[in-house]
Length: 176
Image 1 (tube, one colour):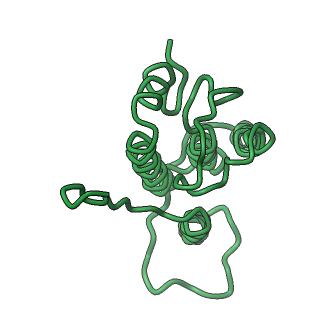
Image 2 (cartoon, helix red, strand yellow):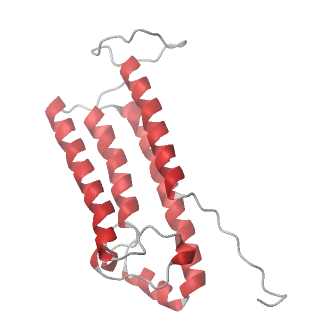
Image 3 (cartoon, helix red, strand yellow):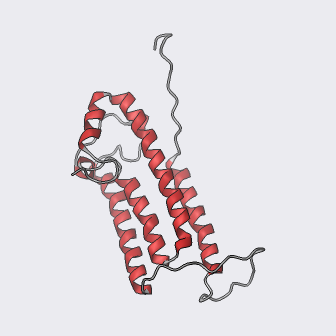
């Protein structure tokens, strides 16, 4: 690296940290959901503040649960199938040696993040609670910005090859 070139810095959220953030956001949201739902039995402790009764999405209970389970299945498929496609799937972008353009990656660049995002919104529908929309949006934004950071790095690493790949594929949804 010459004196005129600066080494670019990238902000990475490690995969394990993302998992922890998702777990704790949904765990805390679940407590709020439980306390705001008058139909559920009261827990043996109270929160030190009042939570308003949550607005409901007008869906029958089993429809909400069915959509939530479908979202979980899609998330698992979108997370696990890329593992079978190539061994670089879980690697830090600096350890990636080539761009994968087969399987899901022939249509979208971030199938695992797509699975996580749609699962977040599946939880909103499964719980039929609009209160759950806020954590779903916040977590989805976290995945979006993580994908953007990865792409900046991959453009620097692979140059025109990644730019051409990016032009052919969608970030989370296939290009039409």
